Image (cartoon, rainbow, N blue to C red; front, side):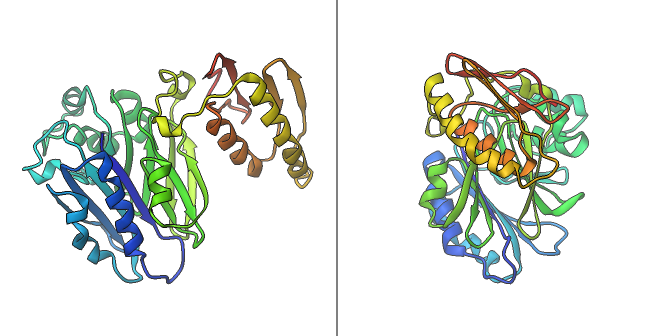
Length: 331
C-alpha cells in the first residue's frame, strides 16, 4: 500500500499552511516509507513542480519550501511502499510524471504492460502506475478505469488540458477521503484518520464514491460525475479500508433513514421544483429530494455501508442483501 494526500487552496489571498500540509504528509508514512514526493502547483503556472526521493516523508520536509507564500494553488503528497520499480530510479517514485500527466497512486495494477502495449506507448519508467498516466493522456478517465485492472485511488493534474485543476478518483479497492476546511480549502488523504490527525479544522469529511471523478477548481469548487457503468456492480463487498467500513442491520438502517427523512422533506419544501414521495416496504426506502440534499443522503448511505447509484433520470436506487448493497442501475 501507499499513502496519498493533498491540499487545494480555496481561500483567497491566504498563506499556504505549510506546517499542516507537512503534518499530513508525515502521517501518511504509516502507509509507506520507501520513498516520498510532492507536486506543487502555483496559480497561473503551465505545469507543476515535482520533488521526490527514496526517503521517508519526515526526511523530505524541505521539499515543501517551494509551496510557501500566497501563490500556491495545490500540493499533491505521496508516501511509497514499493511494489514495482526500484526506488533507486527516481522516475519510479511518486508523483509519477509522464505523458502530460502528474499523478499520485495508491494501489497495484495487474495489466499495466498490456495497457502500454495496447496504447502503443514505450514506457518511461518501470513503475506500473505509468499505465494510468498514459491512459489518462491518450484516452480518458472512463477508458482508463474500465480497462486497467487492479486497485487504485489516484490524484492527478493534466498539464495540457487543465494545469490548475486537480482530479481525484478511486475504483473502491483503496480508500480515499476528502475534506472541506473552515477556511474553504480542500484536503484529501488515504483515510479519515489521516485527515483528522493532520491538524486541519474541517467542516465536512466524506468518502470518495468509487468510479466518481472529483475535480477541484479555483475558488475551492468541487465538481463530480460518475464516469463508468462499472459502478453498477458490487466490488467484493465494498473493498474499502477497514477504517471506513461499518456494519448496520436493516432495522438500524430503517430507523436511521426515517429519522433523516424529516430533515429531507423540510429541505424539499424550499425548492418549488422538488418532488416529494415516500414509501416503505420491509428494507426498501424510496424518496425524491432536491439536488442540494442529495449529497447528504449519499454520504449517509455510504457511511452506513451502502453504495448509492443513479439512473438516467437522476433517481438513486439500491437494494439490501445481508450487509452488502447491490446496484440496480447506474448512468
